[in-house]
Amino acid sequence: MSVMIEQELKEYLEQKFEKFEQRFDSIDQRFDKVDQRFDKVDQRFNKVEEKLDRLEKEVNDLKIDMAIVKTETVTIKEDIKEIKLTTQTVVADVADLKGAKSLIIPIIVAVMTSIITLLLRSIPNP
Image 1 (tube, one colour):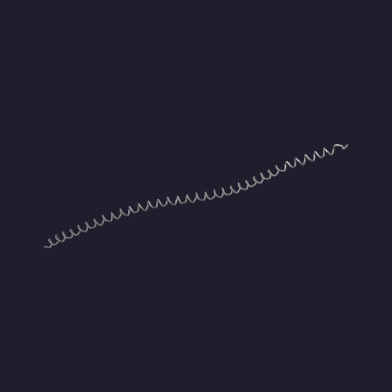
Image 2 (spheres, rainbow, N blue to C red):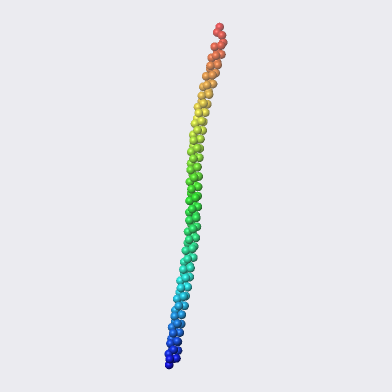
């Protein structure tokens, strides 16, 4: 009888162990699925991080380009100021030349008049 009880107990325990093994296998499968999902989420995060790194690099490049454009703009503004000053100087010089040109004719007339006057005075009176 004791052998029979042992046998029944052994069978009972084996059945329970099999059920536990099945449940553990089921739990292991579920953990594997969860691990796969975590792997997928991790891959997605890695992709997002790569894209974020790329965006940060592009933003830094844009900041550098903006700084370059700002310095070039300042240089262009200075060049424009110099061009304006040069243009004003040229316009003033041209105006002075026009004024001098208008004075040339009266100067020539005055010189000619004085020469003629000298010539006329140098002729003896009868």
